[in-house]
Image 1 (cartoon, protein in one colour):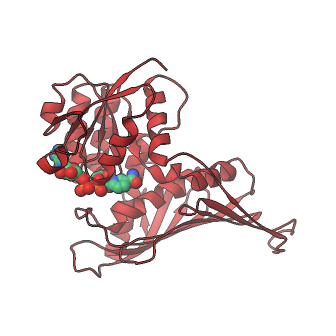
Image 2 (image 1 turned 180 degrees about the vertical axis):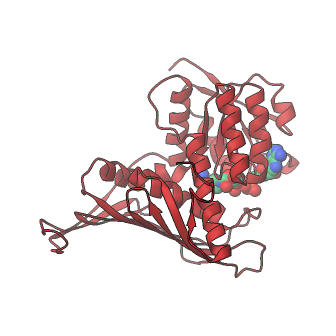
Length: 329
Ligand SMILES: NC(=O)c1ccc[n+]([C@@H]2O[C@H](COP(=O)([O-])OP(=O)(O)OC[C@H]3O[C@@H](n4cnc5c(N)ncnc54)[C@H](O)[C@@H]3O)[C@@H](O)[C@H]2O)c1
């Protein structure tokens, strides 16, 4: 590939350092600059031109920029990039509120620019295989999706709770795996670390095809778990994102709702690093090639779903995303 798109990364924390490493060796792309407000982070930039923030970054000729700052800064930086005619890959969650996410959608669409959101869990090889096989009809009808995502407390993410930080991956997966929209949610959350945000959450979602999704997340667990299960007409299928395996408990040819367990199959799914395939897709989108980027509208839909989960937990009620204006019919 001879084209060389000029890319930059703003925010050089955990996510920014992965983006920087991947962009440094991505075919068809040159990493021309990185930015961070923290001098210590800037000193680790390995010879790439380094600036302090978005204003200085916009003095450099860029085709696109990765926004890997804390979520509260995504809107301001994204809107500035759109105004300057720079395409952007913005980390998840797209923004810290649905109105802010929609302003980003509007800014990029109005400017005719490509924006995408870093929902990398879709790109885990095992989860991806599950999605391709579910949507390809290998397991027949999907009745329920269940996810479990548990982690130790992170040092870094302090500006949002576990719903906006972690469960946002699962609401994105529930819609992407089934090809449906989230219609309504019920949820409970708890804060046990003493911080201002929730650390545990459980949510039940109704999807537009009648499917149920059930999501469990926490960031207070010594045990790390990343499981996605689909209950289907052809049995139980589980993707383990950590071991990168798929396990299928086959329901055989049992008629109707009868269950007849015939065979269990487990296999590993090899594949590239999710951040790398995400960047390949974004580069291909900019080059006008076929791609599967996560759109800004999909990122905004995920923000809508997490806001609905928090509203359901706060009010103890069942929240309809349409009635509450989170989505339009
Ligand atoms: N896709 C994923 O799997 C994934 C994983 C981790 C984090 N994230 C997302 O990436 C984003 C960053 O998370 P992180 O864990 O890397 O955070 P972090 O705290 O490790 O890093 C954020 C960096 O941004 C810098 N920064 C803050 N404000 C800035 C500004 N205005 N201009 C320039 N630099 C600024 C900070 O100095 C810091 O170096 C968050 O939105 C997070 O949700 C995504």
